[in-house]
Image 1 (cartoon, helix red, strand yellow):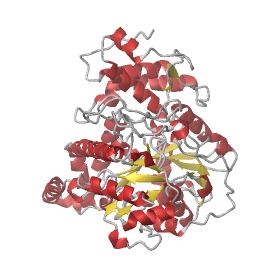
Image 2 (cartoon, rainbow, N blue to C red):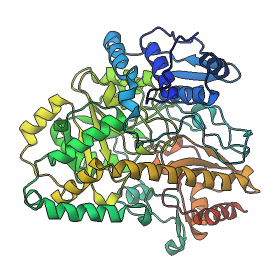
Image 3 (cartoon, rainbow, N blue to C red):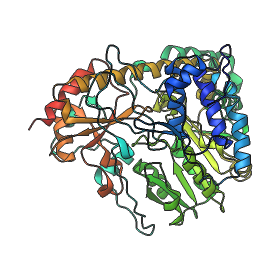
Image 4 (cartoon, one colour):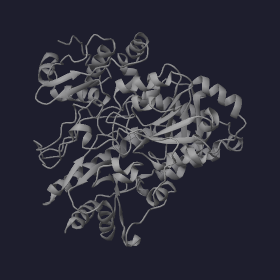
Length: 559
């Protein structure tokens, strides 16, 4: 029996109090690996609360890899014996940062998250055929789209196939035309499809113009120009103006639970520029490793800047330490909180393995946290940076996903030893973001507009996602598709039952006015990629686009 006491008058939600208690007990080794947790109904009865609250707590713990579920059996504690950092210091760190989660998660009040690991589509219940992927540590539960059958079983790595092979770092991978086009930011057109016919784009994560808060941004920009004229004409420090770095530090504390100093933050015009700074700082003589599948552009950036870089196949928990130990690698570039394009969340045990790997020699981990603002279910997954006790993690994020890519403001957080070296060796460089944009963004964050914007966008995207999934699964021929989805990000995976090749299917879709990218496109090792699986980005959709997009999709499947 769990002996926890809930404080219903505290600002911390009840499900987060339960989550924090169980997480602390696991890390303190008081809950042993393999031990069974009370059922949702039993724990709810014990605590006198709703089972929905327990579902929210268990869902967050599953998403982070602390517990797993067995079908028709219950919830169990995940094994953490592979943790390679000092157990005592790690447990002490998490006792400080989880049992006091009111500081980490409850502020500000303007940020609202709904408990529970399920989406609600009104009027639909008792889903048939929904998958149980909870048995795989670190992969979050599939959202509940009630009463609609057709979401397939995504157990065993969410229906994806992963390669266990180790790449030859002496071989230079050749990118296909599609990959080169993607890396250069161009749209690759296959077959004889007419590019002008594409009017519904499900391949990019662009945002709609009406989603950007133009009136507020304009008001803040005018105020900045009127009140800060002297500062606007003063050269920005290399790392960016201090007020924006303070605003970002405060945002990371309130949203991600990261305790950092503004002096650790470097602001730059896009992540590509920041990657170049990392290469200059860590060295071109180091060997860099990126995830496969993933963005081809990352490998191009490293190699074009004179560094040796190769891709390493991931498994169902992210980048494998076993694979890393089989090759020579100094720096890894990963997205542990939400991998693109598979949606994998790296569980806590694997995170500690990666941190342990980094402590050996001059190794570093670049944590790409690019879209955690849009985790649609539960709380944000804690960052790897927050778990690092050896100053080995470099945290990267950008405002291009949450605001617009045209603003071109990104930032990274360096461990203090690296920051000191940056100031000593690269402090002569100029900041690449104009002071006008920096001061305006600082005001946008400090006045609470950024948090309200994120909340509004998250709600809009959740509604869009629900409508799109409902439309897909309500189609008479929905048995031709399988939805492989996660609870994060602005996309999901769609597996199509067809004899057509991915290339032919994409060509048909384009002729019908829909642009969709296959999962194979993101693999360096195409033989390891599952066929007929597509990445559906819905951030640029409007509600009126959804019926046309779904109709075009099924029309393209007609033989």
